[in-house]
Image (cartoon, rainbow, N blue to C red; front, side, top):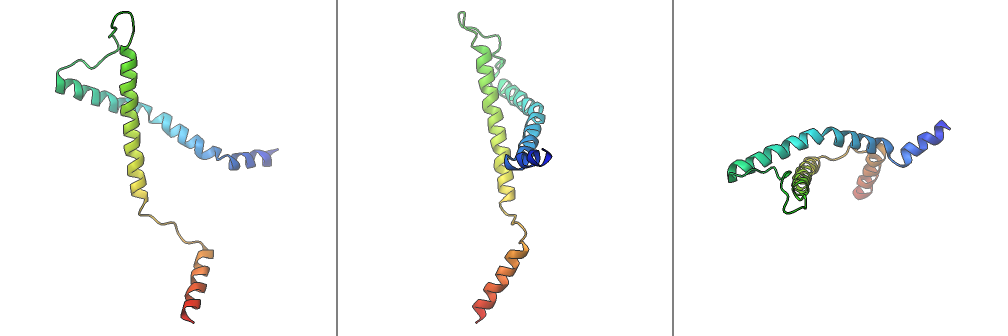
Length: 114
């Protein structure tokens, strides 16, 4: 039973997914703070009140939808920039060679020398 559970964890990459989920949930307050700062800067630059939550044209409560959409776009952009910078930082790193790769490189070099 435990071996099947272990196979399940390994086969479906449950541990990395769980770590990613925990980190994503932990980053929510940071993202919300970034959105609040950006919304405040927009408001100060334009002399506007950028809290749309109370806005209702007619009987349709569109304000909360507009706020949610702006928040989503800003959070998605911040996540995009973080992922892009992490990918760029990791692009220059090469994984260490395995013993098999070292051996194959030696065989290749020996064959080239002949």
